[in-house]
Length: 64
Image 1: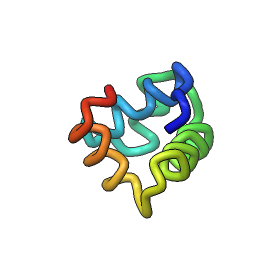
Image 2: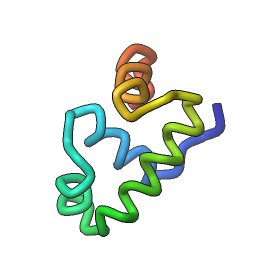
Image 3: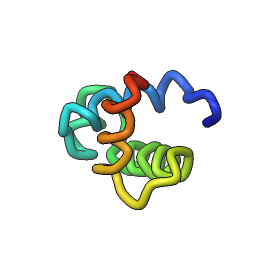
Image 4: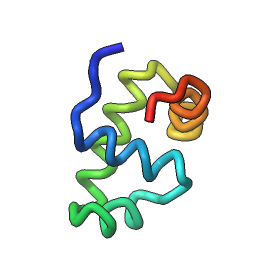
């Protein structure tokens, strides 16, 4: 797996905590559209089908 950017790590942290895109955007002071782009990038990097699987793998392998 490629290294994650700092922003992707931030988004992943809140994704694992169960935040939705709007909540993540509010906490990180970015638009929910930008969050959606980061989540999509994480899904591709982790080779997953959805955000839930990304969160599961991140927790399982202590990525964050």
